[in-house]
Image (cartoon, rainbow, N blue to C red):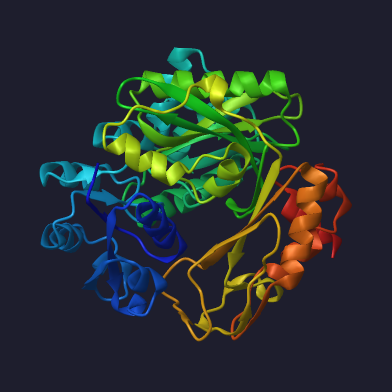
Length: 448
């Protein structure tokens, strides 16, 4: 087992990893930019190293500075969390070259999973359902037009080398497609350094369902059931829950076995997520592999009782998974709201500033993963996520009511947050009934 781990991240996920390490008697090393000098992850870690200015490319994305900090601290492993370098195969390779264990899948596996268009090809060869579209990257708007004529509009363009909504555009006819191609390619180049795109048939009312899986280095695999991620805006998830109100036992079994088949086919190990789109006939289609821990991992932890971050560390240290598929339970219902420092009344623009009068929710079945505190500064340099409010209930009805209660306890001044917006969602009858798809938010906003 590792004696010391460096956490190459910031915010709530850095704290989450530090807490997991402390419970395993593993010493922790934090890294921070100048903007995060007073952050809680710096205080909670056993050691902390300044790795550069506020801009992420000069600090949290700076390979050399992070590797140097790890070596200076005599750390044996690096946990990347999510975002930043978590799915960067070059960074994982750099860790390997410097005798540092990367807590995640191998660099080769990250590269295979990260190329979305190549992953589609692989899934087709495995017999996994994929959404009709291009066989690989498309090189021009003319090629995109030809494929679209064959599969029919609407279609969606996606970045081959990334996700999170960047480089993603919907086109309903040829004119829109030509305009969308240039925009999506430019976004992909700016966001991921890779302008390549692929194209898919656009499913009109999809559900976004993902399956948490785990593999060890001995070839053992389990899935930990599904998460519902359909409540999203601009392709960014807002509310997640486990299990999904759509998925029944038969579909759950199919999704789980498909996820494990995919993991086995690419030699995947450690934590990963297989994402699917499901249409209104419950047909499911492979979407992508996320080769990292997910933001929404707590909902899976609460229904299975398994600490996913600790399992990541154990697997990275060469340990065998301590459970088999039949040991994975599905106990109750869990829902997570991503708390963002953004203004719902001003087109959800980021809201940096200094927090005051903070009161966090608590009580039975309530978990708050956050790095914020009274008088802390929310920087404009990073993602607007400032915390995750997670609840557990015996069933979905209890979980919805508990989340509504927890949101009502959340108090904060100095910045705008998404809590009031979520309170409205949790009073919406369609949401309460589980009657939604990935376009729920746009319809919800139009109601107002």
